[in-house]
Length: 132
Image (cartoon, rainbow, N blue to C red):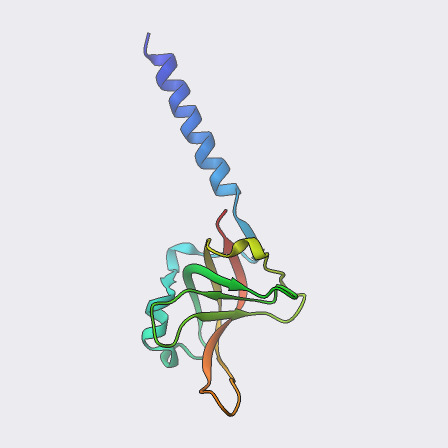
């Protein structure tokens, strides 16, 4: 008597899991989320990751409103937020990404700020996944 109910509950849970796994917005290659470090971890010593490929995770703080060419991850750090930047048109990040969890794989580079500000760090991604 309980088997059909359990089977239905399992099928509903499984289909919800599969749907949520497919609901992410992906740009570029597949992101290996198992290799991801929180953006705050990267920001504890960003210079040690300079010119290296890393995968980071975080909450999207803001998105470029003109061409969607950058996103910033919220970071509880004096250095943060942390910027992810692509060439205009390579990837177009949606404004709806703000507040969502995202993962990005790419090369950590210096981000020149100009004469009045200290240079920062950014990630030039080859892959980005935004959870829906």
